Length: 255
Image (tube, rainbow, N blue to C red; front, side, top):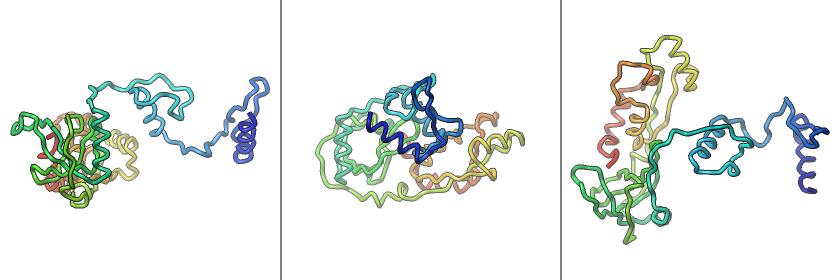
């Protein structure tokens, strides 16, 4: 109680217009003029915490949300990741080492699981699943490996390549987005406001290795006669396709 009284006293000095004492309720309440002093207003942060709670990743006590509204995230099939394997993988990455992993590829060239040595150096998410970015000793190239397809680890050894040599990971490409011109003028204006495009354009700085997944996530690879299904398009499409091809994302995606 003494500490709480001291904290409230200091807060009232810092932000005197933020709260007042309600004698009938016997507690301090926020005033209509309340303005946060320790947290920045962020709908994205609130919604991210709300989604994590809805998905069962965190509890309400682990958020800054006082009373959570009813919310539900669209369920997606869970991808199993062995926590002990994940712990050992993190150790390998921190040490800058390589490891042999039993990996199940979906490539028709490799229908059976096999042991392959990888020097992992980063994680990447496509919004639905996590990938491990690393140097494949078998193919002699940097690739993406879906984390949930890692079945076992063995035989830690020295690295095969430095993370700095992974140009598709270290280099970025600026993807310019704009409302789909096939929409009406009013619809394009709404899309520009929704995606925070003050001048009708916005730019996303994306690692070249993730361009393939951006194309999938924004449905840029789906032919459709309905502009409403693809409200945002790439303005610098020619440069985008060149960068995508140079990163060989279409070859590496989902191996």
